[in-house]
Image (tube, rainbow, N blue to C red; front, side, top):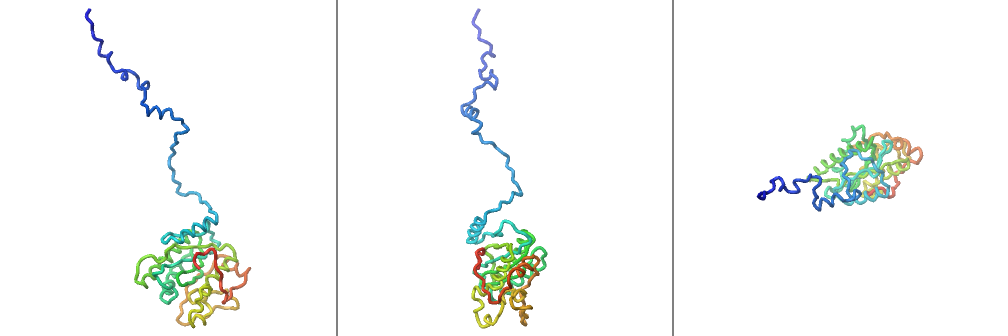
Amino acid sequence: GPHRAPPRALHVDRDRRSPRSLRRPPADHRRRLHRPARLRPRRRPAVLDPHPPARRAPAADVDAGLARHLHRPGHALAVISAFLSSRDPLHVSLRVVREVGRLRRPDAYAAIRRAVAVCIGRTDFRIVHTSIQDNHIHLLVEANDKRALANGLRAFMISATRHLNALRGRRGTVFPTRYHAVPLTTPKQVRAALCYILNNWRRHREDLAGAEARRASVDPYSTGILFGGWRGLSQFFPIPDGYQPLPVCGARTWSLAVGWRTYHPLIGLRETPGPDRHLPIA
């Protein structure tokens, strides 16, 4: 009979007749399929640990990093030691910007005195001794932990910034770096810090700046007048009329209250401290 065309079903495209699993994949897909498993990176879910484990840095690394940050104004400084014990007092140093001017003058003294008084009522942070120098401040403090240290020094710096800026009629930063603190872990270190803080004015020759300074036995810009560890003195100095000393807190740590004077001699009034290699501020 006459030639008949095959049914339309026989003209279906070959790819449409074959199952999807039998089709030939494209070239780029074939390369992905045959890529060795060891070369394919494994995707792992990103997990952010809110409390990463603390890593204790070597002392050399800590000192090097501290030195780098100290020369970068505006960067916060933390404690030099990776660990802080409530049994150890700390020597804290704070530098002020040049625009604030000299700190060893009566109005700046009053401003810093108010800042120290702000911290007196705290139970977790105590300023035991203070020394005001030309462009920096030394504090001998006790803190229950790192948070207490940070909060206490923050309160001090906020108050000092507000009052020092008010004197100059300016606004802005007063402390270019946050703070630098050195834990004092032995009675010998505590004695050295006491001598360094209370007699620091002799190191800077402030005891020779004028007739009044030459007559003074202790630095009027420090808490030396309320210090009971001077050699050859059985009682505190009498407070002159009109003079308001810097507030102090009683020491609670053993090394600062008892330990240093148990194992080491008392501090001489004319004893000039040497350089402290741990401090970037003299």
